[in-house]
Length: 78
Image (cartoon, rainbow, N blue to C red; front, side, top):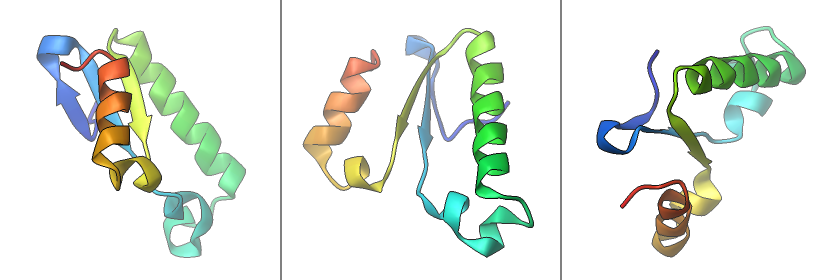
């Protein structure tokens, strides 16, 4: 399974998501927002079942190095 970021030494998977994939018609590809959210949740559950810790962040966190640092450290990245 492919994730946005993978730190094997920490068994940590990182996912960076904007809100566009849940709101923009061209990214929804004919699905409802609810269908996209449920598919994403199912995908994350499949990844978690493989063992890694999951951490997610969006643009609000990514734009701030202190917030991103805090989010990643709280998930176990050193």
